[in-house]
Image (tube, rainbow, N blue to C red; front, side, top):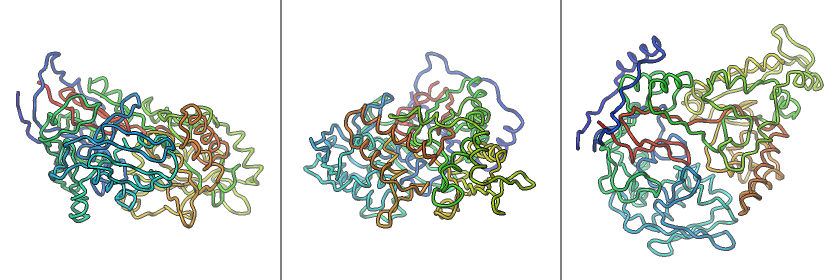
Length: 548
């Protein structure tokens, strides 16, 4: 049965009306449920409301990985159980010394420009990433990647400088989507930014900046991942990937039928949507959680005891439970989230709320006076803490509310926290990014394993700067532990080393956790088989279809 569906556009007027509606009612009635024997409708358009628009449709930001996953195939996919399965690559082998990975590609796959997905194109993508084509892929490969070569048409050899036991697993992340070599070599940077060419289930038809991206079905699709729910081309003809920044508006669009699926459900709306029988998905992203790291290179947090005093000042679990409405998980671990293999519960439990201990440490450090507003003073200087955060990009509205509660709780023990929401334009311009720009910094980094610790904590040197080390903490001892973990093939020993690194971070109060980053979806029950890919939790529309 084929019943194409008219594309529905959220106009500015509709957005305003929906926002007003949402402010007047927390929930609506139950959504109409399709009959148990409802039949699949081939074709139609999925209207999907996402919260953030990337600068390009491929790159190193999670929002780019989410959308590019729809039209760029990766070499491997990750199952719900964490197993690596074939996608563009049928198989792989690793040399005895762990330094060469040999990847065997599927035969007969083409990019949508008609050029082959062959070993030469895959090897070119590796070199393209590390040469600046994808900053996140580059840091994942940094310190390990040496070269990639086409052994024959369907065999790629990737050479590393030292063993990386989870190398193949890392390639399941959306940053490693394979693009057409011909397109990258012959088209302009802007063309590849706006319409990347892959071999995926959809093709980028048009990007209406500030509004939406139209993805159309690749009718010749042949390279679905092994863990897909069906084979052949996608069921739907089109995905209308809309950018709707406000969470209340996205929820209202789902309730009104203006959107079939939405991303990033505000915590306060979760129970209402669940009660109305919308299909809800929640994925706790592995990797670095939403954590706060201390700038260890300048006062006040060059002093380890003041870092500890700040953490002891906060009843973090109470903050997250209250604002997160039981939807957002509290996370005490400043290194990796609970969804990450090798997670250390010991590191997560290192600091409990203890105002007495916070006050003792502050008194001992000489911050014994207070001004008229209750802030601590030493030698005439107020205990100021500059805390910028990326509002509307890295931090959503729930996160901003959590930071405001941190600000209030820290005040009780005498910290004056200057909370600075940084708009996207200033974030992309690099404002508040240097050593002299802040005292504490918040952020996450999705990952499929604890190897993210190397990216976040590798020492930064003049010859090899590490812009991802937001604590500016350079310790060869910590680096050595993480490197040993990355190269350890025995899983039990590997996890023990990752745990040791997390406990080092906690012991020295380099960073502390606040909450686990979530990827959430709300879906109209008329739309079936939308699922979250298991490397980063992004929506997958290849298997999705409507019923009636």
